Image (cartoon, rainbow, N blue to C red; front, side):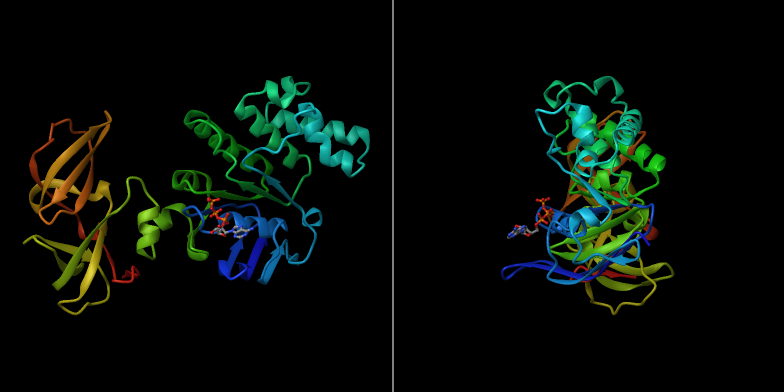
Length: 356
Ligand code: ATP
């Protein structure tokens, strides 16, 4: 087993930053903790690193309990958002630092740093100071410092957030390649759901210190367990509309959206009583424009070439985003109707829990 958390909690004075979080991160997987600012993802990572004490629960790395073990003895290496490089040391010395501290033989230091530099394509820069490097190169040095320690687990705290958009995409790919090459367990913290979707083989969504859902990226996308996960994963976000159950169809529940005669059929196995107030969720790419749907007005159309986003509004004033592909018909200001297949209409109760 890579990393296991059992009922981990953390309080700062009376503030409960992490509440009873349990999770399994298999050896060799790429786990991503994602959630909005302040949800506790960095605190959780820092507890795994040993930089923050736990207020409750247990942490296991490779089957060994490390809850009270010193950070240096946990077999983890952390890469920080601000790189934390020593400005007066060369790239080589920055990467060699922890090995020198551990008094490793010279030849071993040279070999491990050389290997990390090769993997990260930093060989030409070994004699430079951090100030002579680009942002992406500095980030690679920070990763190199972790690699030379040959940790069981790599911990990344928003490592790409200081890079520009283009470089972030490039570094994202490099991290995926690095993970495949090293085969080590990696845990990565971000507030960016696109980063989470693209990097992770397992995503852990947090909100207000509570684990909302854990699963493979597409599992979370297709089968969110609550409204928060449904809205957080996916861009543009899932559309939500208040609705009332008015009947039953073979595929699920028939629901009426407020202020309209249009009926959606929503995917539901369990029958719901008529008159039950729910909320339905439909992703922008699952709404199709055509006859007999829910009437909406297109307020703004964003044309991206291959796809377009239509920002529309229902008669009762709800915003509904529609993603279209392969059509360049101008629809700004037009009244259209939208519909969705039952398969793609999800149901949530008033508390935001997904009903199936
Ligand atoms: P961000 O993306 O903004 O970094 P996060 O999800 O990583 O957010 P944390 O840094 O883990 O959030 O913080 C979780 C909560 O705990 C926040 O409300 C934060 O204010 C609080 N917190 C974190 N560290 C401390 C501390 N040392 N003392 C008091 N409160 C803290």
